[in-house]
Amino acid sequence: MSTASSWVSPLSTVIETEGDQQKLWVHEARDLARGFCGALFLALPLLYTLEMWERARVVPSWDLVLTVVLIAYFGNVGFVLFNGFKPEPARKSAWFDALSAMGIGLLAAVITLYLIGRYTLHTPPEIMVKLLLLEMVPCSFGASLAINQLGARKSGGGDRKIASGLSTDARKLLGTALGATMFAFNVAPTVEPQLVTYGASWWHTLALLLFSLAVSFVMVFFAGFVERDDGEGGVLRSRWTETIVSYLLSLAVAGLLLWMFGYLSAATPPGVAVPWIVTMGYVTTLAGSAGRLVL
Amino acid sequence: MSADRERSEDAEERRDDGGQESGDGAGQRNDGKQEDGRRESGDGRRGSDSDQQTDSGSEQQDDDGSDRDGGSEQQGGDSDTSTTKQDPPPTMLEWGVRIASLVALLALTGYILFMAFQPPKETRFEYTVQRDDIAERDGEWVVPVRVKNTGSDSLLDLEVKLALVAADGSVVEEEVLSIPLIGRGESRRTVYWFARDPAPYELRFDVTGYKLP
Image (cartoon, rainbow over all chains, first blue to last red; front, side, top):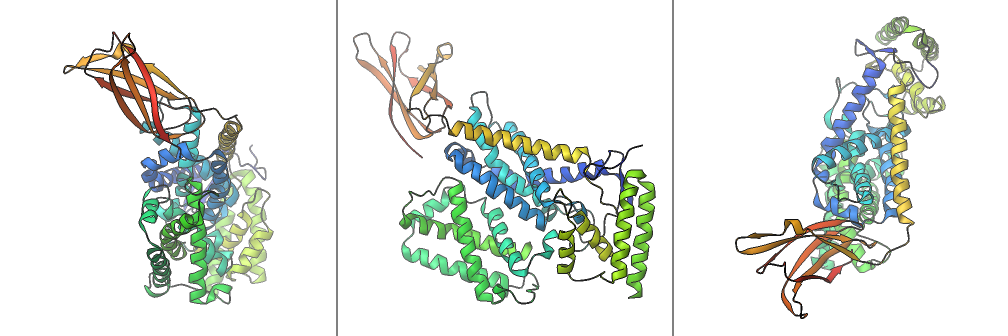
C-alpha cells in the first residue's frame, strides 16, 4: 500500500480532472509537454536569429549569470503567477514551476540548437553553454506562458491566475514589466535598434518618446481592446500617472535588455545610451501596454 | 444563494468520491481538505473577494512554496473555477524535473563562472592548413584553413591574410579573408583561392586587423 507524504505523491496517485480519472504523473507529464510546446512556440524565432548566436559569443559571463538569475528566474516566477503551464491553480507553485520552466527551456533550446547545426565538434564548450543559457531565457518564458499562448482544455474556466490576489498597482506594473520583457526579447538582440539610434537626431528621439507615451495611452485607455477593472484606489489610478510610470518602467526594461545582450555597459556615454534606450523603449512601451491588457 | 449551496454540496460529494477512489494516501489528504472546505462553507466565506482568498492562501502555503491550499480554497470557494478536486503533492516525475532543472542550471552557471575567473589570454591564433584537401578547381587552387582564436576575447571582422612565400622570401601571391565573428576558443574553417599551386611555397599567415565587441 502506497502512502502520500506531504512532499511526494506515489506514482499510483489518481486525480480527477474535468470528469476524467487520471494518474497524477500522466497529468504532470502532460503539463510538462504543454510547457515544452509553449517554449518552442514562443522562442523558435529567437533560436533561428543570427544575433542571438552572436550575442552568446560577446555577452560577458557575469552578465549572463545575472541574466539567468534575475531576468530568467524572477521573470518566470512572474509569468507563472499570471499564467504557467498548469491549468489548475491548486497545483501551481510559482517558485518551483519557474525552475521547471527553465529546465524545460534548456531542453527545448539544446535540442533545437543541435538540430539546426549551432553545435558542432568545433564549438567550444563555453560558447555552447553561453548560447544555451541565453536561448533558455525566451524558451523558459514560452514554457511559463504556455497556456496563455496555446490554451488548455476548458481554457475558459474562470480565473486561473494565482496573481489575482496582487494589488491593482502591482498587477499593472508586473504586467508592464513582463509584457515588455517577453515581446521586446525578440528585438533586443538585433542590431537594428543600434542602427536606428545612430541615425536619429535628438528631435527624432524626443518625438519617439512622446509618440511612445501617446500610443501607450491610446492602446490601454482608448482603443477598447479589453474592459479593464482598475479596482479601488491605487497610486496608478490616474490614467496619465499609469501611462508615465509604466513608460519609465518600460525604459528600465529596455535598458536592462540592452545591457543583458552586451550592447550597453557602464562605459557607454549617456549621449548614446539615452537615445538607444528611448528607441528600444518604443518597443518595450508598446509591449508593456499589451502586457497590461493581456496579462 | 441556494444554487451556490447546491453547487457546494455537489462539490463536497464529488470530493468524497475522489478521496475513496484515489487510494489511502490521497484519501488521507482529501479528508483534511474536506474539513477545510466545510469550514469555509460554514464561515460563509465562499465567493468572497480575491483579496480574502489570497490572504488565506498565502497563510496556508505549504513548505514547498505552492499555493495548494490556497488553490483548494479557491476550488471550494468557486466551483466554476474548479478543474481539479484533489491537490496532492507532486510525484517523483515532477520532483525529478525540478531537481534536474536546478542541477543543470547550477552546473551551467557554475561552468560560466569558472570560465570567468580564468586568467585572460592575449589574442593569438592557430592556423591549421588542411593539406589533404588542397585541390585544383577550374584552373585555381583551393586551400582550406582552420583558424582558431586561442585568446580570451571574442573578435569581430577578423581579417586573415595568407601569402605564398618563395624560397627567396618574396611574396608571390596573397589573399585576405574576413571572418565576421569568432568567439574565444572558437575555430572557423576558411578557404583561400590561389592562381598558383601552393605546394612549392611557404604559407605565411598574418592578421591584418579585427574589432573588439
